[in-house]
Length: 80
Image (cartoon, rainbow, N blue to C red):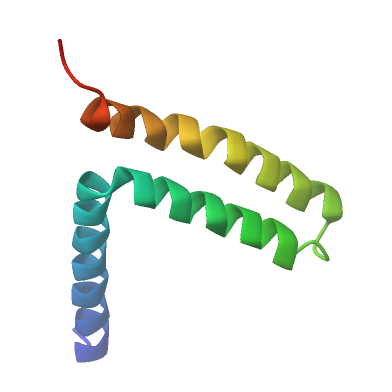
């Protein structure tokens, strides 16, 4: 197998592991980062198709806090 491909696969696996660790340790920061990325993409790439960019931005702003926020809420809400 090509050593470059092997190296890239190893780098990809390490990056995936670091992102997963970050997601479990810092869900609120992850939600903020993902929301910011979606909004930045909607602002930077409107020339592709303005309607698509607006829709993606709106869905991202609504869906990301809901999806990621539930795991964050369980970590910061006191248990009874």
